[in-house]
Image (tube, rainbow, N blue to C red; front, side, top):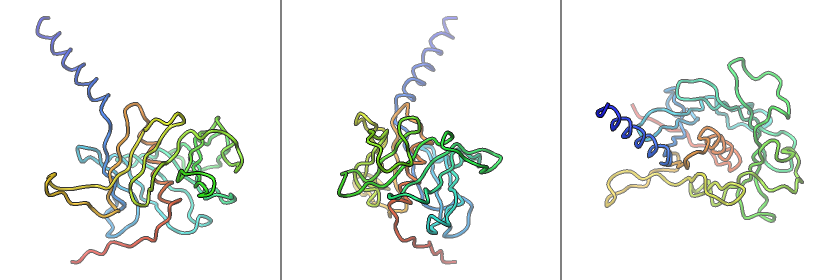
Length: 225
């Protein structure tokens, strides 16, 4: 018993340390399907394991774009994002995904809604309204958003804060190489840091919606043979 107990203590301590550590992901704006230059998202954890992916990405106008499906690294559906066709603001709604497909979705099934903020009305780039806290499809709610995006997503320099102002996630440019010789990578590769006890899949859904709201012309990757 004297040998087992200290071992359990070390395991518990290691688990506690891991739980208190922020999750760091590398987000690559390319599909994991292997097609050269295919638009999408491939998200890797600190160990280089594929954690999330989006393969059905479309940059058509929101009227024709359809749903975007966030999956885990094994391809199991997690969350589905769909554009709000009629809205004064650029808005995307998120629902829990299922293996059966889209089906008919109702307001009660909606998890959150993200919409772009007006420059005249807010210093935030976008706001997230969680279902049950506000009428997410309304443009005049008067409610405090559940989350807000501070900074510039297009420049890959922004923070996601909750309703009380606490930072829950951060997006920044990705650097490679040693500290003395670090190289800042292109904007198609960036870092996502999620604080402990925060739903990483939900934060990744925020990133996908931000990418559509903060629209930027897509340049396909050309690979030489």
